[in-house]
Length: 424
Image (cartoon, rainbow, N blue to C red; front, side, top):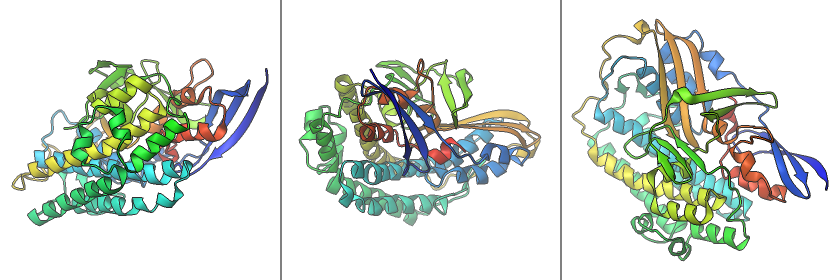
């Protein structure tokens, strides 16, 4: 028996993380995850007027700024006993968040995943599709990134009929990108697919990568606790938790617990004292997506299932967004004045959304409209909690038993780590 420790700096993850790999008998038996940088965004918000959160929190991250904005505005609105938001405003918020998720997924696939498998020549493919989604966001939110168009009571954007046509065009063009490169088939047909072999039989970058994982015998690696949780909810995503395939729709933020870690600046997050995975695979398990259910049945919560779930989610959101655009009633108001100004409010509020990497939660405590306490719980804190040997976090568990650091890094990056959000 031999025990060795190897430290590796992981970059290209929206910041940095250091992994200390501990080997026993030439296999990883523990991984210490260190996030070395912090910016103190929660402290910056203390004492400020409530609506400053709508300007400051989107700057937590240049990649998921819109998710932070929507989580922040939901937290502030939750401080009201009741508040009225038009359906038009709800749809606009949801659409822009969908577009942010889609472009994140495309960047992850082409800029992070493919280069690790030797497909560096494909990285430029991401630019066209992500530009289309950025334009779609800017059409509704005025700019991208760091938009602040969502306010307590609705949104400040008021799209025209011409802009809705432009929006549909951006979505259709992105769907055509998927059909030209990701999976060379009709995407509606793919969404109804229930068999892995059918997917693997297509041409395109996604089937190529999935077949590559199988050829390398990596497809069963990366298994963790098989526990999933989703806190955000909208017209597509469902809130709840799943342990293996047993779904429980009722979850409560009161059972969340955060703890400091003396080995990292990132906090650990648990639900009822257990680590849960968040992200596209968790969302697909709650939605009972047929193809992902089949992948989970055969390969459990492996990196194969993770890659497939995230890639499929882009297509699901694109087609769902087309339907949402058609539901926008331009005659409705974009903004409804709250029954009293937020400067009069003393209350606590919680806002939860589904960001690209998983559930993002904002908690705020207001005293006469000023922020007394602000807390952010980010997806990477869920997936990259740095537990101990007896109780490892989700990603730590997924890397156990791997015999190669480069392969462990691949498993690590299937969670699409974001350092800047994690140590906000």
